[in-house]
Image (cartoon, rainbow, N blue to C red):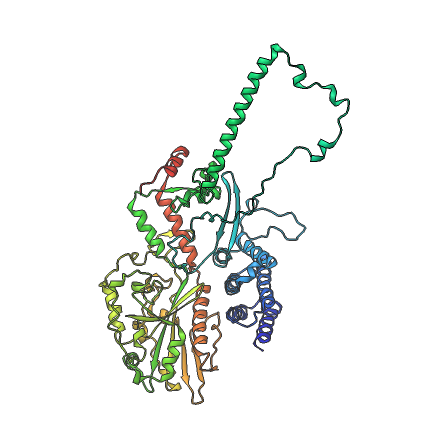
Length: 640
C-alpha cells in the first residue's frame, strides 16, 4: 500500500543516511532532496509516527555533524548541515501537527539552539540547564547559524500566550499565516448583549416567616420566665406620658417603612419586564481603535529602563528605539525593505526544438503557434505551475523589472491575450507559469520572438514604473553590511528545459546563443557578474525531454562538471511517465538552483538580507533621546 511504501522508503533513506551516507557530500545532499520530496507526499491515513521519527533522524544527523571534531569541519560539512536544516523546515511545514508533540518540539528547538549558539543548554536530562544569557554564541559557521534561524521563521503553530502582568491578565493567540484571512479589515468581535428577561418567574407563595416554631406557644411558662416583669406592671403615672410618646414614634416609623415597602413593590411590578440602565451590570464597549504598539511593548516588557539602556562597549543599539518619522527617506527605505523577497527566486526557461533546427531564431519561433508543437508539450507546461498575470502578480515573474510590484486594477489590460499559442503566452509579457512553496518561488518562462522586446525595453530603461511599486532592485545598493555585500544574491544559474522532437538534436542545441533570450535583470547582482561570458556560459544546466512512442519520456541531463554532482530526482538517461514528468522536472530544477546557492560563498538567504536592511534602517534613522523624551514621544497623542 501507499502507506507502507511511504514508511519503508522514508525509514530506509534515514537509516542509510545515518549509517553510511553521513560523510559523503553528494550522497547526503541527494538523500536530503529525496526526504524533502517525501515530505510533500500525502498518504491516508497520515503516518504520524513515521513523520515524527524522520524529524528525529534529521535532528540527529545535524547533531552528529555539529559534534564532529574541529579538524573535520569544512565547507562540505557545513553544506550538509545547511541542507539538513532546510529539509527539517520543509517537514515541519508540511506536517505542522508534529509541533504539537512535546518530544518532537523539544528535539527541533534543541537542534535549532545548537545551530544558533553552537552548544546545547542541556547535554543530558539530569544536567542543570544553561540559560541563553549565560551562553556565549559560537556557531559552527554563519551559514549554519542563518539556516537554523530560518527554521524558526516558518513552522510556528498556533500559540496561546497567557500574560499576567502589572496591568492585568491577558490571553493572546498568535498564528503564523502565509495568506491573509478573509475580511481581515473587520474585527471579528461584537458587543455582548444582555439576555432578554423571562416572563415566567414561577409561583409566589405568601408565607409569614416566624422566628420560632408554632409549638412554642403551647409550652407552659416556668417560674423563671415570670421573674422578669411586664412593661404594664412597672408603669407609673410619671412614666406613662413618656411611654406614650415612645409608642407614637414607633407607630410613625412603622407606618413610614410600610409605605416605602409598598412603593418599592409597586415599582418592581411596573418594571418587572424592563431593564434599569442605571443599575444594570454590563461589560464596557469594545474598542476598535487603540494604539496596539504600546500594548504590545508593555506586554513583552520593552517599556522598561533596561530596554532603553545602550551598551557602553558595543555598537549594537538597545532593544527599543524610535525612528525619525519626519525624515522622508525613512519611507523610501521601508519600501526598499518591502521589496526584499522572503523566499529564494529562481527562473526556468522552456524551449521547444524541432528536428534539424540549429539557430535560436528558429527555436523561439516554434512556440508562437499551437500547430508547431506536440500536444504533450502544452500538457507538460500546465503541469509545471499555475498561470499568473505578470501585472497582477506580486511575486517573482522571471524578470526584475516586473517583479514584486503593485499594479492598479484599471491599469491591467486583459483584452489582448493571444490564443492558440504553442506556449508563447508565457513569455513574460503578459503571463508566466508560477510555482512556490514555503522557501522557494519559481517562474517558468517560455521565450518567444517577442521576448527580445522586453529585454530591449528593460535595457534602455523605457519601462514605465507602476504606482506604489518599490524602486528597482531596492535590495542591492552596493554597500557592504555584515560579513557580505548586500549585492550578493547568489550565483547566476541558468536552467533550461528543452523539449526535443528528435533526441539526437540535443548535441546541436545552441545554449550559448539563447542566453540573450533568458536575461532576468539579476545578472549584474550575482556574484559572478564580473566573470567573462565564457565562464558564465558554463553555469547552464539543461534538462532535455524526448517523447517516446510508448507514451513515456526520455530525459537527458547536461551541465557543468563540478565538485557537487547534479541534483535529483531526475538523472541522466531516466525514463519517466507522463503523469510525473512535470513534478520531477520542476523539483530537479529547484534542487539544481539550491545546490548552486549552497556552494556559493557570497550567497545570503533572504531573511539575512532583510535583517541586514533592518539594521541599516535602525542605524540610519534612529532618534537618540533621553529616557523622559523617549516616553513623552511614545505616549503623546498621535494626530489622526
